[in-house]
Image 1 (cartoon, rainbow, N blue to C red):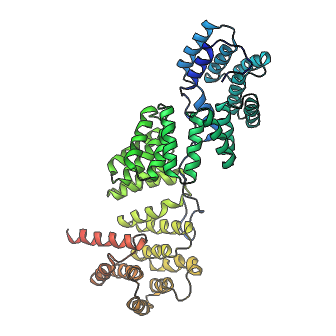
Image 2: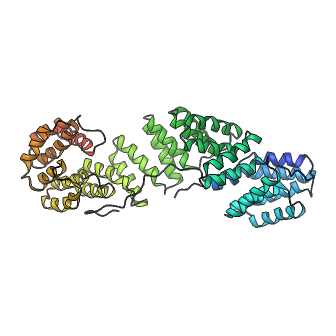
Length: 475
């Protein structure tokens, strides 16, 4: 935006504005085995969805593609070879080329002649941001706004700084001021959309981000953000369309494939989801979440071997990723790999210590492996988390001694909660199967089938055991 008191020809500022409308730099993303008994990995948080880092968004949006910036510079050069607008355009080219020191020198030359040149001040703030000079960046933006309080780009930049500091109220104020002077300011629209999404105002966010897409259709992150809002609104088709558009603009950005793969999973399009996760892995082989999602999809499709390979890769990349161990344990159980299932259940318990049933499942693996002497050592660390008189204690005693069989069966007979009864029946059934009491074990499995809570591990293992029995009967 031209300085109010600077004299310049009309062509160069228009060319500068045109160059600023074209996007080049893609923001950088913030991306960044447990041993068996008695404890597993340290607790980790489930990864949050990646967000565009706003400390790099300003420069990303504001710098133009090299070829377009060069054309603008060449036209400005022919129209006004020594004008300050030409110097600013040349300095921007130097920034795009990574010659930051030379760009800074050029901007300083302009400011030496025109201290109130807002174009030079604003672009110097971009340069400070690229160099990690946050205080200088903020000071230059404030100086720009003090000279021209309608400078929408500088106001939006201050909004991004407030957003980085998590001062949502201040950020919203700056974004609203920027949009009052420039309703299509992309940085302000994206920032405003981010605030609305953080507040879970998805419909309003969708409307603001639609304006951002219209303002700059070839900027992929406008579509990526709108896809997040549309997914929250359950407009999965619209979200897929947005991500597909973003991929067409930047096919090398792995998170677009991961996000679209998630949407395909929500629509039960497993093959399409796995293809997207595979593409994300090809683009970034160290992205553990793509492996985790593909592992889940492969398991759902019946590809246990492929799922285990993916989970193995997840744990190589992130050994303390606690969410991996329970699906690994389940897959190992389905393959009859009792040592690995036992180890993985214990690792899962180390991550989720308030669920002693994971230790009971580990002990049951020792029973299936015909290693009953291992059971006491497996159960002992978890006993403090099993309240006296609880069903956990009764199952633990049954697995440890079998002397408590009568008490456990009586408890099962008295239990009126069908889901809890199904959980207890599972342990008795598998113990009987391991002891050669196949008929009694299958009867208990069938009594448990369909009655367990969907989110309980015993429910899934009942299904696996019945499938195994059916397969063996068919041989």
